Each structure stands twice: as structure tokens, then as C-alpha cells.
Image (cartoon, rainbow, N blue to C red; front, side, top):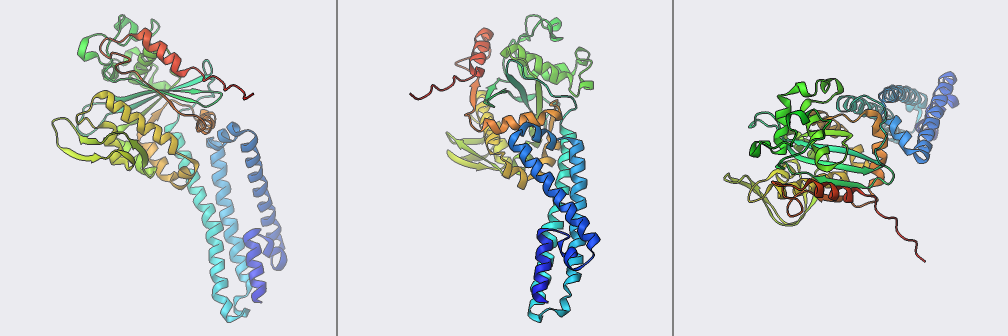
Length: 427
């Protein structure tokens, strides 16, 4: 009877319903085994789709309807495993097994419940969290084609906080992604750039035909609150899931770089700390020691040179510290953090910290990227790991932020995002 108990529980763990086919309710057994084979077939189909057509697999995995079906399916299997495991345990007839085997057999039954029902239930929970987060963060819409073979995303880091009135973009990065290879170029744009130009089809052209040129009050970052006070310039922005301020920054960056901006992502720097902590911190190589603080204010810490694992608090200070640093130094630090996040946001980190990452992202990210684009962009993110991230900072000595040469800026950007030449074959 002890040997029989181990066989029934073991078979039930491998193929739910098999114990019932051998020694119990065969109708339940046939249903459970059929459902198990169906699950295996779906899993195998998903694996084949991922291997043969990864973008399509990732698109399905981020679709709200598919996630609803997946969550309901996981809940179904959690209940099925619960029923078959408890039923198999009754078929064991524990009182008729050897006394010394009873405790291990009962422990194995509990372990089976944890491995099957517990895992399926937790997966259903994470699926629901992911579905809600995707719905809150990403916009609706269809798949967007690349322009000239590239996707462009404007990343804005907002400086809202308890000690500030309103919001201004403290960090501006234009990310250009090769739609074929996944190679990424990050263009850093100074927040204190003067006389930003606009194209003649921009709503800002009538207000600023010679550029945003009112002196020290017209730095690029100040365009954000100015546009927020003039919503009539972008009357359809809210309906399209954006804001007049974000649309103004889009037009400004297009005027500066000469590249079309397809998508925007606004990250609230006040909540940035929680996202870094959700990732488990980031590893950054610090070239020189960094004193944390604000000029004229107290020193709150220091980061030594070398490879450092930073938590959210430290990473935020590293990206924003002003102590004896220029805005251009801060831009370089911000790009260090962004690149570290891109490199370290791997599948293992996402799976093990998924709930915390999803909850943090929902609180601090606003974007017009359609949810339907997630499969395409996720696939490009995988491809990007095969390339070094190219970085271009539009700062002195290359660019004079007070009297910028925008023809030079656009030429430099065009060169930075140009596809790398294919390596010559070895003779």
C-alpha cells in the first residue's frame, strides 16, 4: 500500500488525472488528463511560436484579451490540480500504509499542492498584475511602422516633487532603434539648450518663428510649463493620450535633432527611486567619485569610483546631484543609469521581480506607445543586447548650448544613428 501511494501521488504530480484513471473516478481522470494534454499542447505551441516568430509571440503575450484568457486558464488549472491532488490523496488510503511512510507521503501530497496549485495560482496573480499595469501605462492603437528603418522614442525625466511647483523635464534622451538589428543610439539633449527651433508646421511656429529665443527664460526645459499654460496650441493632445506640454517637447526635439519623434515616455523622477528598487538596484561603473548634494547645500553622501551597485536612493542622487557638477556631468550620469537599466532588465529579473516592477511602472510612467507595439519593441530589446549602445551628448565642446549650431547638431545626430557598416567577410 505504501508503494501504491507513492505511485498514485507521483503520477498525479506528473499527469493530473492519471491517479483517477488507475484507481478512482475515471470520468474525472479522463477530463483531467485531457485538460493536461491540452495545456501541454498550448505550451508547446507557444514555445514553437516564440522560437519561429518571436515578435508575434511577444505581441500575443502582451495583449489584454490573451492575458485575460491566460489568467482564467491558470485559475482553472489551479482548481483542477487542487481537486485531483486531494482526490488522489484520498485514494492513497493513508491509514493502510506503513506507519513510517505516512508522514513522508502526506508531506509529498502537500508539496504537490504547492508545486501545482500554488504555482498556477501565483502565475494567475502575476498575469492579472501585468495586464492591469499594461492597461494603465500603455496607450491604445495599432502597430506603427518604423520611419527610415528606425523607431524613435523620446524619454523625458520629470522633476516634479514636494519642493517644486509644476514639472519640467530634467532629463531628455532621444532613443533611436534600428528596426532591423535592434542597435540603439541614445542622444542626450541638454535641458539648458537655447533658441530651440521649430518646423513651420508646428503649432509653436506662430508663437516662436525664430525659435524659443527669449533669453534665460527660454531654456528648452522651460518650454514644458510654457506649453502647459497654452493648451489651445494642442487641442487634441489629451484625446490622443498626451498633453500639450509633451507635444511641445516632441516638436522641440524634432527641431533640434532633425529626427521624427514617434513615441514619448515621461518618467516621474520623484517615483524613479521605487523602480530602481523594484529592479533590485543597478550596477554602474563610476569613473570619478561623486559627492551627493546641491551646491550651497549639505552633503548627503558620496559614491566612490569603480563598479557600484546602487539602490533607488543612490541612483537618483547619482543622476541628479549638483554638487560641484555641471548640467552636462549630470546628463552623463543620467545616461549611465539608463544604459544600466537597459542592460540589466533581463528576463530573469522581470520574472522574479515582476509584481514590484509592474506596480512601480504604473505609478510613474506615462507614454503614448501603443500596447500593440510591445511585441515589436520587446523583440528589438532582445536583439539590442548583441550591440553596444551608441551615445551622443549634445554638449560642449561639440555643441555650445547658448549659441548652438543646429546644422552641426543634426549632422552629428544623423551620423550617430546611421547603420553600422556590415563587417567584411574574412578571406
